[in-house]
Image (tube, rainbow, N blue to C red):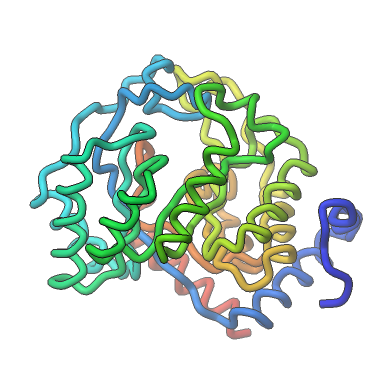
Length: 309
């Protein structure tokens, strides 16, 4: 693809006419990934009362939101959710828990659940369980976990503006530990929190350097009661430009449009997949209801049609 895109020269992409930037990103997607669309579904398996102070998160106890709070769901509930994920067409099922640490009992429960899902349901199991220790990663890997999700959220420079109860390096260390345990890594972040395009470029370049396998891009949905509750939603054009830049920098990595795609892109969701995205979450998010599955099926058909033209 010519000169390698770096932190210092990526801004030149922003000077391209919008149509040219989209075409360039779409060309990279075709060259490195073809027309493969990755579908994932997640379960909020433990909700609320997190001690961390992430300003964007409805599950932080430091934010005055009214999200449901509950301990780790029962084994049967998690397994049922995995069955439903497969039924709606997801290739990967993610178990997500609030908080930055789990107890040893919770780890043991999840290892049993992961093993059962892998052996009896036949769907790839992913998890987002906070900053785990090396031995905990080994337990889950032996149980059959395939991929670990741990977002870096934004650039290292902007990170102190959104979280203060743990530092950026902890996130990098967690990603490293997951990779050492033999897991694939899914890591991305949120755009629209007040960061600059340079912050987004730096995030994309770091994710490339960390050699993660999948990159979810969330668009901030301002939630009443959080510190970003009054934040203005970024424009559709800025979202599309960001997806383009991530694709051009990350080349062969899966880029998934996650929470906020409905709010920010509205009727232009398919454009995100002409701008380089090749994955999406279906079946809803953690504390935000997604679209009806039939609406997403129609979107998937629209994407496939656009890709085949």
